[in-house]
Image (cartoon, rainbow, N blue to C red; front, side, top):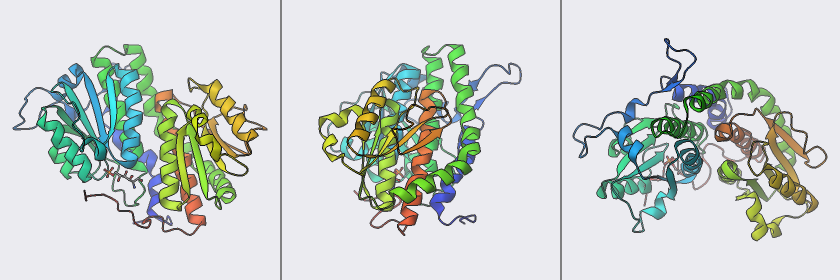
Length: 383
Ligand code: M6R
């Protein structure tokens, strides 16, 4: 049931701190005998399934893999993009992200030292399932990051991690997305340790930061709800909106745009801040909403700041999403939303929440069918 909320989507947005805790539970912990240290245990990746062609432990194969391929669709593809940053930076390994629906119709070069990570809330997306079958034909290890227990993708993959996010009923994915990002961060940290890319000290720092995310979101939720309602009132009549972010926040911008278009039917696009100079800048004119993610921890923060000033100069209705205590956008942005800060790789878990709420409130104010948007299925099982 909706638990007193007007829509499942809102319930699922609000449920995220709990869903995240469930995804972390038992997987990240401080051992009783060494409480200043953090450990990561990923049970679903320890042993090959009964009857598997390759009996080697999946974690060992992952530690020696040359390349990871994330295959997914829609929102799950966005979490793959965030996963790529984490795998490269924290585990020091090559990672590529593929739309399953493109991958399966090419002849991609796959070898037996590759690992394909299939990301799916439903575990039933036909294209993602097909990408797994192709990877298996080339003897790559296949790993599922799935929410629905016993689903086709969970059964077809060699090993995996369940999200434990609980049922997601709203067609727009919210809590499954944040839990997918958590699962990929846990894998990246575990591999970072195993592959020697992370020192014990760095690992402890990242684990402590990851573990603290659900509490910081929970504390922030009620003030954030009020703020996003006020901003939504101002943006609800827009016909187009642009979302900009750089680095790890580019996928967050894409996800913000997808959420807005799927439930409010406002045309929206996400783009990497600097890339807009190569064409999209023509779309910016008076009153076009531009939502910019600009965290001081972003490596290109100075460039982003410059872009934000430029958008304002061109007349955009500017909403800047930044970290707590940042006053750099006073007098530049029409609206500023401040997020609790964390380590850069974990920041998307926090910065996506205001964008989910913004889409929700805008769609609600426009009277849209939020839990079941027109034409859209919760899981796309057709090819
Ligand atoms: O169940 P899956 O994660 O495989 O679904 C993939 C996409 O269909 C899904 O994420 C879709 O984009 C959502 N409606 C986004 O909110």
